[in-house]
Image 1 (cartoon, rainbow, N blue to C red):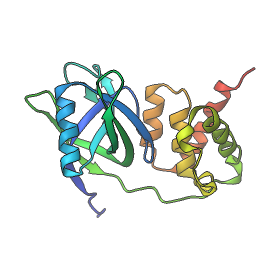
Image 2 (image 1 turned 45 degrees about the vertical axis):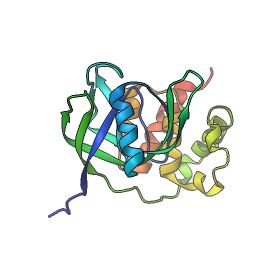
Image 3 (image 1 turned 90 degrees about the horizontal axis):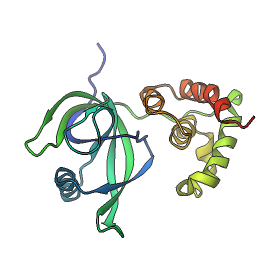
Length: 200
C-alpha cells in the first residue's frame, strides 16, 4: 500500500497565475479577507496556498481554484506607492486540494495533501539548449534569478519551473506544467512549445 502523503489545512488564494516551487511572486493585497490571511500567516509563520483560478475572478465572490497549487511563504511586505499592502512570496511544496470551504468573510480554506519535493536531476544532453534559452530570458525578464548559481542550470526541475514562469504561456499550459511530476517530461513539453516563440 502506498504511503499516505502529509496533509494540512491552509487558507487559499486563487489567482490568474501559477506559482511554481522556488518561484517568486509579488502580490497587492487590498481585500479584507486577504489582509486577514497575511496577518494570520505573518503572526504564525505559516504558508498559504496559491491556486490558478478555473472559474471566477480574483476579487469579489470566491473563485473556483485548480485542484493542484503551491504553498507560498511571505518573505517580505510593506506599503506600496499606491498605499496598498504589497507582499513578496516564495513558492514551496505543491499540493492537491482535497476539499474546500468558504469562511463567512469569503476566504477560501482547503484541506490539502502535500506532494513530495522533486529530487534534483541532471539536464540530459537532448535538452541542453533549454538552460541557454533560460539564461537569455533571465537577462531580459527575470532579474531575480541573475544571481542564481551555475549549478541551478544543471537541475532539470529548476530549469523547467523557471522556463514555465518566464515564457508567455496560457494559464492552462502553466497549470499542466505545474501538475507534471517528472522534471524531464516537463522539459520535453517546454522544448516542443518553444518554436512558437521563436521569431521567423
